[in-house]
Amino acid sequence: MNFGAESLGVYGIRGKKVLRNAAPAVLYEEAIRGGDGDLIAANGCLLANSGERTGRSPLDKRIVRNPESEKDIWWGDVNIPLTDESFTKVRQRAIDYLNDCSQLYVFDGFAGWNKRYRQKIRVISSRPYHALFMHNMLVRPTAEELADFGEPDYVIFNAGAGTADPSIEGISSTTSVSLSLERGEFVILGTEYAGEMKKGVFTVMNYLMPKRDVLSMHCSANEGEAGDVALFFGLSGTGKTTLSTDPNRWLIGDDEHCWSDEGVFNIEGGCYAKGAGLEREKEPEIWDALRFGALLENVVCDEETREVDFDDVSLTENTRACYPIEHIDRIKKPCEGPQPNNILFLTCDAFGVLPPVSKLDPEQARYYFINGYTAKIPGTEQGVTEPEAVFSACFGAPFLVWHPMKYAEMLAEKAEAVGARFWLVNTGWSGGGYGVGKRIALAHTRAIVQAILSGSLAEAGFNKDRAFDLSIPKICPGVPTELLDPRLVWKDKAAYDQAAERLKDLFEENYASFKAGGSSVDSASAQSR
Image (cartoon, rainbow, N blue to C red):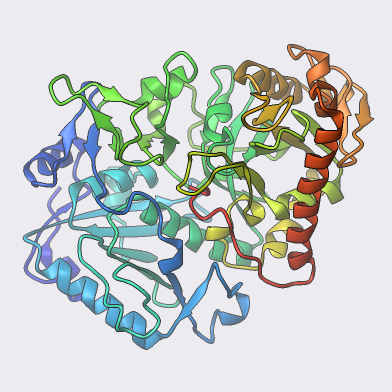
């Protein structure tokens, strides 16, 4: 669909050839002709490379400090302030880059399936793969909605192939990811990693929605045949996408949602799954979603056959697959659901001391939500030689705008109002930490989730564990009883006690900074998608 070049004149972009909301087939053609090395994989996906940056750049993220919003923002290591004067210079540098491009791509879509709360988003980019990414990740408008789209609420200027100017006050490198809430503009320079756009939209929703008494959440969601809704919180690698994509339930969404007085709705129009180690046998729904129209970012394929090798992480551990939610067979459409019944906090505990599943009381739920714990394992990042605790407030600190306690209080209030249950599910190690114990089998985790969602686990009876005072179910169908108490499966009980005490101390140290109302360094910037 052609979009008049004059339509971008309001932004200072003039005289360019522009494709607006182009079909995936057109974007494929544009990408292959573009000279950026994009390819078509044997499974029909578009393969794109984001260059030097293969993940988000949280240290380069800035928010304009403005009297209208500054009192609402959790300033510190997550939200670093930028002056409006510096933002103007960054913006102009992006506009100058886009004006040097012979071809631009525009995608207009929505953030949010609920029409009462959705935001109109416009993306302006120089690479067709970025347009395809946002075609997949935003809610795609109908032809009638596109014709009546009007002025967007927020505009993303993706000039990622250009560079930022570190001589500008507040800009620390040649990469800049800058948001002005008052202008409704988000500017990207110096990184072509597509996830910056996705998380920029999420950051905006994390600011706007709480102002309307709507909780924005970094979680996946699905719905059972009886209309019961489950939320899955967790950092990257904990199973959020895998466990919510269930052939026996209807997927609402895999990563970003809002919870209003009407129920739950997905922010996005697509899914963003990790590609590393993907196997059809373990994740058939995701595997089958990777076909024409989907995008694979920074994966490796055979030069002759174009067969993708998901085990090859030579480019990055953070390989990604992006596809429209319609590529999953069992989806709830529109992607909305009623009030949640169960809320699951997923953690990959590489220390091997947390139970595979435990029921949380409201105070414990607040504690584990604020801590947002998982663990890095050796080999995932340079310099990581033993398991490291990772804390990311509300399981998504890099994208929060208000103080984490605000989101925690809203979660507690909404859960209490509808009687939702909280659960902590460990998808990590058992019988010892990484290198000693074994990763909890996905089949066992699926059985745990099924027991939670069926309601049977709530009636199982519980014991208290010694280390964390967690309520551990006495039995769980499909899971060996001895696995439910982590201490019992450690051969060296003294070693378990020592490891558990160490993790408990880390929890309490992290939580104390939030309880005091202060800021805490997010140690999960690369982990939180």
